[in-house]
Image 1 (cartoon, protein in one colour):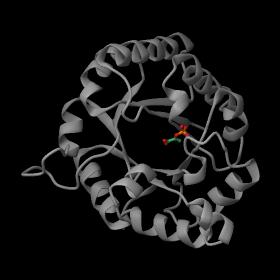
Image 2: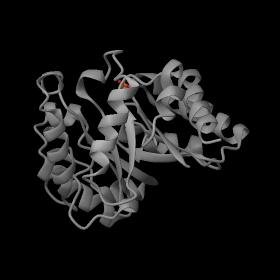
Image 3: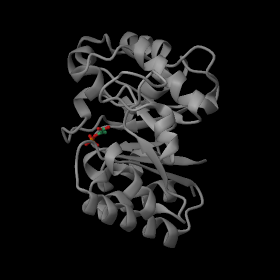
Image 4: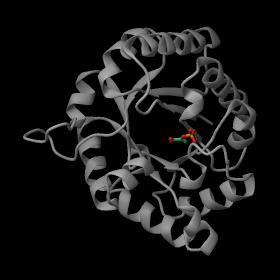
Length: 246
Ligand code: PEP
């Protein structure tokens, strides 16, 4: 079974550090001759071309961290899905909790972005996740159901997207959801999605917990923030994904 390991570099790095990180990861991927693991790097858009130069010749793919729902026009600061494709991206993260919270992105907007991304030829990685209050109040099942139903566009098939389950309370906090929580939650989410959809987990994934997490049923990979910024930790997570696929 294929696993997908995605690195979300967020707003970190310089051209120089992006080049070294990308080349250390792509060298590792090439030497390891991965059979079952797809690796995707999502640098800040302004570093995309530099990253692409440094993953050239490897099986590592480039992704964006967001895109507009519009094709082009007077949208200062935005990046269209076609622009991402133009620089060589194949994936785009959409609806990350930092964008839902910081930029008030709604499920409807995320679905529109996903449509634009798919039309441009990208694979959207659509993120959903509950807050700590929603987890503790028991509301989380309903919240996730509604996010999944409304952020994944109607008419999408399983191969059109990846769903990333990222509990907000586990992102960047060092608090990882326990295995049972991930298992039960992925099982619940999968029922809301087209048959055969892949779900990846995100939230404080590190080399120490990656293998365990990837062994949980219905976990088809991981979305990694902090631990994707150092090649030794990210490469160890890639190794765990490949091992689990054995
Ligand atoms: C993320 O930002 O998508 C994420 C999962 O971050 P971290 O791995 O640092 O928790």
